[in-house]
Image (cartoon, rainbow, N blue to C red; front, side):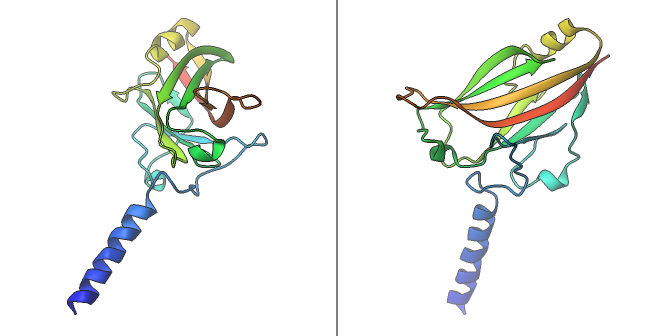
Length: 172
C-alpha cells in the first residue's frame, strides 16, 4: 500500500513538473510563413500553462501593464545556439526600430519565454513610454522581434528570427 501511494505521488509530481515547462512546444504556438513563432499579450503576467486563464489582448492604453509570452518553433538549442549565445529583442514603433535589448544566457531547452514589456517591474525596454509619448497622441503600432544571436557566428550561420508579436498602444 505504501509503495502504491508513493508511486501515485511521484506520478503526480512528474505530471505537474513536466506539464508546465519551458521545454515543451506550446499549444499556443503559431508559426508565420517565415517560420517564426508568435507572441501573446495581457495586462498581467502570463505564466507557463496559464494562458487560457487570462484575458489576452492586443490593444492597450499607455499606462496599462503589458506582459507578453513568446513562443519558439523549436527549443533554443535546436537553432544551434548555446547557453553563451543570447536573444536579441528589437522594439519597433510605427515601423521604425526604436530600441534593442538582449536576454543573456537563455537556457538551451527554452521553447518560450516571458516578455516584460511595460509596467512589469522588470521591463526590457526602459524607454518604452517616452518613445510612445514622443510619437504623439493616437494609436501606435508596436512590434517586437526576438532573434537568436550567436555569441560567435560561424561561417554561414547568422541571426534567426524565432518569434514576433504585434500590438497597438493608444497614447491618450
